[in-house]
Amino acid sequence: EAWQDKEARYKKDFGYEQRCQTIKADLRELDGKLGKVDPERKLLSSAQQCWSKKRKMLVSELRRMLRIIPEFAVFVPGEQPTSLSELEEIFAPTPPRFDNGFNFNNKLHRLLLRGIGVHHSSLPKPYRECVERLFRLRRLGIVISTSTLAVGINMPSKTSVFAGDSIYLDSMQFQQEAGRAGRRGFDRRGHTVFFGLPRSKVEQLLCSELPALQGNLTICPSTVARLLLRQHSLSGSAHHEVFIAGIERLLYFPLAAAAGSGQHADVGRRLLTLQVAHHFRFCIEYLRLERIVDESLVPSDIAGFIAHIFWEQPSNFAVAVLLRAGVFEKLCRDPNFRTEDLMVVMCHLFCRSHATPRSLLEGPSGSGQSTKMKGVLPELPPLVANALREHSARVVEGMAAYQQGFARAFAKELGVDNTLPLSRVCVEPPLRSPSANDFRPLAVSARSAFVALSGHGDRFESAHDLCTGVRAELQIDPHLLPVVEPDGEALNSYVLDFFKHGQMEVLKRDSGVAHPELWTNLENFFNILRSIDAAMRRRAQSVQYRGTQTAFADKEVVAAFATMSAEFEIKWKAVRDGFGEV
Image 1 (cartoon, rainbow, N blue to C red):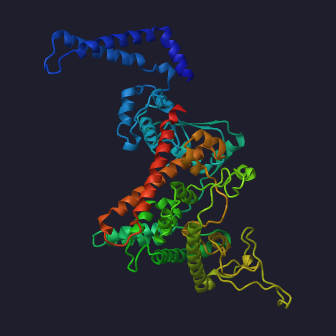
Image 2: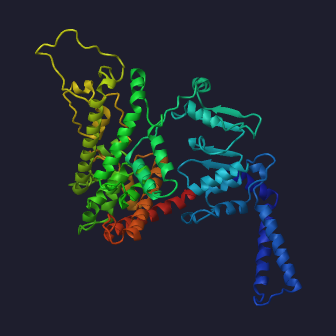
């Protein structure tokens, strides 16, 4: 804005503004003359041809007068500044939902004309793609970004500046971001600048080594469902055997899970392949029991729905369970049903955030409404909560049985569970025989022997108890269990509040959620609703499932989701499109 003000004063002092007004007046006069021309005439008179040629010259001169002066912008030396027509062309092929294109009233869009770009995950995708393209074309002199430019994008630079410290700035992030400066094949050398960082942190980053590579690919039900869908679609084709071989390699991939550390490292490496195979078998068994695939592993229509929003596990399975159990049908057929009731259920499943202490301390929002607190999400309807609890109990019981069977089958390889989980100190058994008064823990196989000292056996109460209470050698990733447990914990109602009033400023003031996180979560929730709505409508209208039993046959449920998605889309687009003016 300071540059813009200085540039405006500069143009005023040198007569730019007066000349622009004169050109605009001449253009209006010429447009009036050319507007009187008969459109049926194919040839223009000599005077009219002169008017048309003069108009083109005036338009070209006006564009030059309105162009940003290089002294008030940041451009790469030797490169031409980005023109308004180029930006309009870049924004033109954006998807239909971003049909506004280049908006001169948007501050971020105007900064592109001055060679400055901004890049972080909460910005609209077309704008981020425009920044990436302009930077690769060397049309931007500065890009202000978060770690979104650290990995996966080819954007070499001459200098990388680290402005300010962050808890997320570790050796891996530093190496990735600093490596953009002086990329081989583009520059002979690069520069790294530290600004606002403690000297100790700078020395730590410069001297630190890269962390050891550790895989994070988890065999989970969503992954297995997508594999079965792909395998079914390739059935009978030449690529079927290749795909099956790829699945086998996935099970034996060495970085598919952590192999343990310390004393348990050797045991973890020996049993890793078997544990991954057991996890894969559990996922298949779970999909069969929940009727997501049949006995021949042929996926149902609900499997395609789960795969459509696979990145939202376990919430995608929660929606599928409620659909399969007919919970949404009963909810939508209630005489007192409102779209807000369905939104409460979705807020409990997606983009969950804990309620702020201030909301809990303020208490109820009105007299006699003990369950309705300001900023706190209302509880799930009993029908929905009971269905999710029953599903969670089935999953925990099945996974516990798999872990117990694995622990008994490989008890010799696992050895005695006598190492403390945190200190890794090995506790030797007592030399004397225990007396009658000594406490004897329950005999357990999958449960940690130290947790069993409190009287806990191999029966697990919840998914959290299962993941934290098993012995150290048995590795269970929380993502392996597709459960959403309605544990009664108070959740923030920021998504529901936005759905009611659509006021971003009020939400930033009252929700207690940081603005970047608020923006990101609302954008994600918007995309989730659109994906669910599209998946339900497409499968409800699919010829493949006409005349057969399907979870998407109820028109009231499909219409309720479509209405909820449309109402949220109207409010969110109004906020997002006006982002540049805020």
